[in-house]
Every structure is written in structure tokens, then in C-alpha cells.
Image 1 (tube, rainbow, N blue to C red):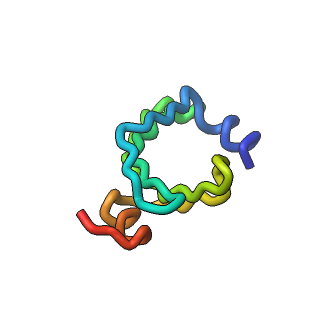
Image 2 (cartoon, rainbow, N blue to C red; image 1 turned 45 degrees about the vertical axis):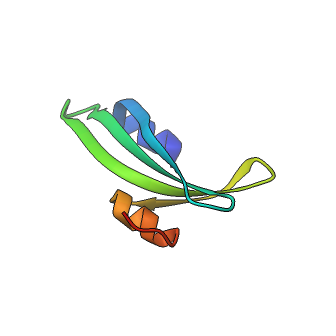
Image 3 (tube, rainbow, N blue to C red; image 1 turned 60 degrees about the vertical axis):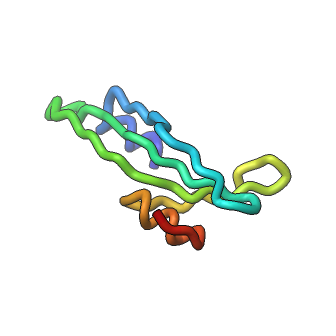
Length: 79
């Protein structure tokens, strides 16, 4: 899917703006994604969050969420 993704999305950037300790082996990230449609030239921007689980210093699971609050809730935390 990555090959097809890059065919339609150009100038893709993923910038982490916040990393929160969610306890144990988990962190919550808030990130901004920007890209441009290769055919349309239309710019796209989205802010999203992830709950990342680590084991032995390596990422073993990434769960994506639309908001910071949703990622915190999935980690058992709140704003």
C-alpha cells in the first residue's frame, strides 16, 4: 500500500509535536501530517495522535486516533 500511497500523495511530512509518557511501556504522541495530492496539487493537513507500545526498546504496536483525548483514553489516562 505504501507504493500506491506515494503515487497519489507527494511531499508527505510527519512531524511529532508532543510525546507523553503513558506509563509502563506506552507513549502517546501528537503529530501533524501534511501532504499534497500529486494529481490535484491540493494540500492536506491533519493533526492526529497515536498510542505506541514498546517491548525491549522496540515499537511493537501503534494505534492511531483522531484526537489526543482518544489516545489518552485508550492508554487509561485523561486530559
